Length: 119
Image (cartoon, rainbow, N blue to C red; front, top):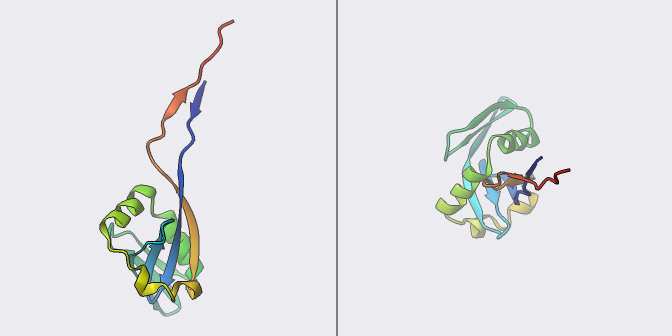
């Protein structure tokens, strides 16, 4: 029987603030992932790091959900490694910004064989 080992799950917060897409990790560091525009009643967004995008979204929550569905742990972890922490710049603005918590699985867990008893 094959069982999957438990994966570590990492929580992050995504924010939309001042036409920017921001992410915060469990250490409180905040990074700028990309931009968004609001035009003619729709929201479009673009991530700087991988050029992933979303278009014609109706609400900020819909935009956050779309962003969350298009990023993974490796991308976000890499962005936190390479981008500067801008938490001081946004610390008083994030409490009122639209946000969403996401939990991403760390990679590396592989199926493991569980012992079987012979009868």
